[in-house]
Image 1 (spheres, rainbow, N blue to C red):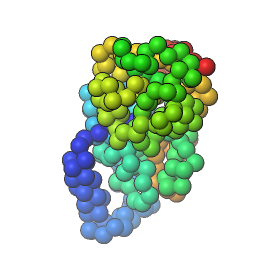
Image 2: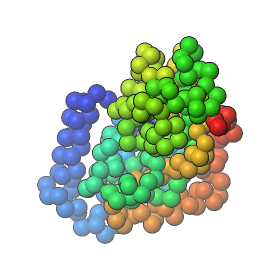
Image 3: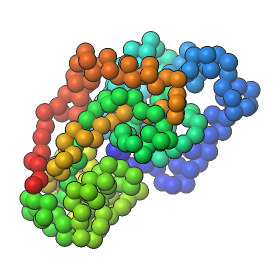
Length: 281
């Protein structure tokens, strides 16, 4: 996952985005233009891609997706190329995590910000085939009761949190089942701050985020271990509007990038490739 701007800022941005989408090229109506309808793209001759506000390392470098640097930024441009778009024809928009997977019209052709593919989300949006598979990892800081944990049983009496609406939160509830229940936070940033302040003993995030948080952002950050049963089960997909005419085309582009080794090479470059963490039993 999925760390966002404060609520009022995000809400204001959402209003601006919604107004922009309604204004569009359709003469102030909610209907797309004839050319956009014919092509399936939001804007004829352009590929509109959504990501978070802000977007974080290692998924996007320096919150600048247009640079093509960072795993998801690089994947987005690789998909654009497969779809026949030059880099100059890519337009970036920002959304919150929840906005992107909510039912209804979208102001993007596809969106990527570590969206796990789930059956529940498929009821509201379409997904491409997976562009990345990861696992769920427990992290903590030095001095925390979780620092010495080596088994799932060691974690059960502790306070463990994750971002709401994520597979990380599901993993806490289903794999660890802590005695006090999962501690829920609006964003990964909120969960990280709770860990730093001692409000929780540990948090759960995906593996690349775990390496980044423990290596860069957390003083004394430690990886406790991977949660069993989540290896490769968490698949990230590009999000599209429900029943989008582009879903098959975008999926074919992702499939091609997987088959020719591009996705693996980008993961090696930006996410560390073969880095591992111990699996908790």
